[in-house]
Length: 130
Image 1 (cartoon, helix red, strand yellow):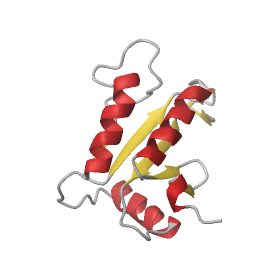
Image 2 (cartoon, helix red, strand yellow):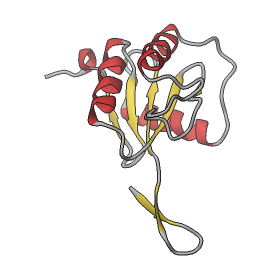
Image 3 (cartoon, helix red, strand yellow):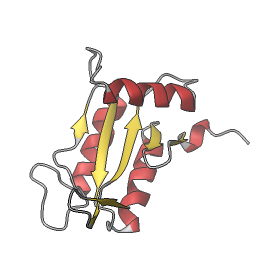
Image 4 (spheres, rainbow, N blue to C red):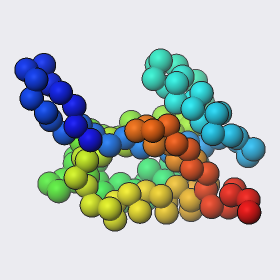
C-alpha cells in the first residue's frame, strides 16, 4: 500500500491488522464497532483477556516488538495492546509467512481478525459455520 506524502512523492504505509477478544456470538459489526471505539481513544478499563495475552506472547516470541529487532515485520513497535485487542502495524513488504502466522495464532486463541485495509473481519475457524 502506498500513500502520497506532503511533497507529492509516494511512500509505503503500514499494513494494519488487529485481533479482538469479543464474547461468543460477536459479529463482524461488533468488531468494527470495537475498532471505532479504539480509534476514538475509548478503551474500557478491563482486565486483559487471557486470549489477548496469550496471542501477544506467542506473536512476539517469534517477532519481537520490545525492542523491534532488525528484520522485524512491525512498522510500529511496540505493538498497541489493550485488554481486548492487539493492533499490529506491519511493513507492507513483510513476508507472507508473518500474515499466515498471525492468522493461525488468532484462530488458536479464538480471536477475531480485523483487516483495516478493507474492513474485513475473519472469525476464528471454530466459529465459522458451514
